[in-house]
Image (cartoon, rainbow, N blue to C red; front, side, top):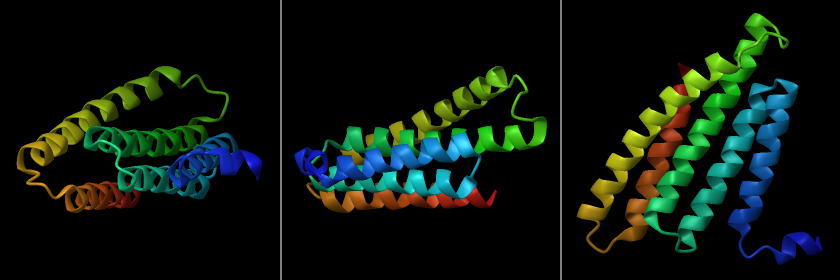
Length: 143
C-alpha cells in the first residue's frame, strides 16, 4: 500500500496495473486480459490528461496503448494458429511497424488539428481524442 500511495497520480497506478495485466494476458494467451490491460493503460492516459499532461503526450499515450493492444492480440492469434513455438518474430515486427506507421499518422493528424484549432478548450479536445482512441480500439476488436 505504501508503494501505491507514493505514486504521484492515480494515472500512473492505473497505467502500471494495465501494463501488468496486458503482459500477463500476452503470456497466458488470453484476449480478455490483453483488452483489460489496454483499458487500464487507457485509463492511466486519461487521468494523466486530466492532471494536465501535454496534448502530445496524451496522443502518444493513446497511440502506444492501441499499439500494445494490437500487438498483444496479434501475438495471441499467431500463437493459436501457428503454435507457441513457431518463429514469428519477423511477422510480428512487420505487423507492429505497419501499425506504428498508421498510429503515428493518425496521432500526428489528431494532434495537429488539436494544436491548430484548440481555441483554449483543452479538456474538450482531450476528451474527444480519448473517445476517438476508445472507438478505434472497439472497432479494431470487432474486425
